[in-house]
Amino acid sequence: MHLEPLAIVKFALAFPPFGLTAIAFWMYVCAALVFMIGLIKLSGELSHVHGMDKIMPFGRLFFAIPLAVFGSEHFTVTGEIAKIVPRWIPAHTFWVYLVGVALLCAAISIAVMVRARLAAALVGLMFLLFVLLMDLPATMTQPHNRFFWTLALRQLAFSGGALAFAMSAGSVSARRLSSANKTLVAIPRFFVGIPSVFYGVEHLLHPEYVPGIPLQKLTPEWIPGRIGLSYFVGVILILAGLCLLANKKTRLAATVLGLTILLTVFWIYLPMLLAAPKDVVALNFFFDTMLFCGAILLLANATKK
View 1 (cartoon, rainbow, N blue to C red):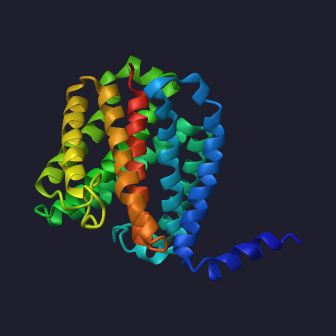
View 2 (view 1 turned 180 degrees about the horizontal axis):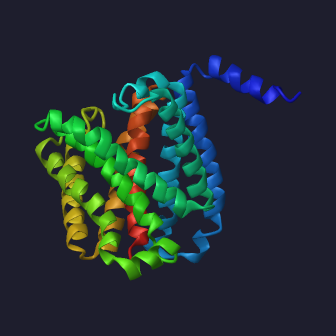
């Protein structure tokens, strides 16, 4: 009887339901589990916040769900992920599994607020290491490729959101940092602000590509108002990014930017996912943009009014 749960998991891995691939199936499972757990936790918090601040607690949820989703991929597409680990690092498969476990644990920790700031700090450092060890070296090989810069800055923004949450008011780390070096507390702002300005300029130069994180994918023509939305998101990204860099109206700027990215999730990426629910690429784009939204809202919530 003790083997029954393991047997069910093995069966689901081999024969996922609904015609889904094992990759997509476990992405949906992880997203659903963290969503339900996180929503239960959030239900007790929403009555204590009012107005626009009601969106703030959802930043944790929007950040935690994609972490779990991407963590699952470390176990379903292990070989593909192992290929991007730098050659000089030994035991590629081991590191892929380790990161997968770390992402899943961090997702649950942040969703239920148990050792959440410690988990966020470790996740923030992990994304920063990804930038320094993988993304930036790859970008230097093709410095004129804007998509390489987009990927590197994306990880930087994820790091900024996680570090902002780890340093948020009331945490031990925040009290220590405020008394030790206030410059360190500004780092998350720059980690989010710099990518925002870069992405905003890319939106204005190439509005035909998907908004939010302007990756190498054209927005489907059947989505209404796609070009106008791209221009709108681009302007908000630039204005909000400049406010973050200048430390002016930072909470308002981050909140508006987070809501704008959330708009793109529902306007662009959700219809793309509904049109192809079995497509792993559509799933990755959806949760990737949700993670960006979550990172920005974490920064907004960590910023004083």
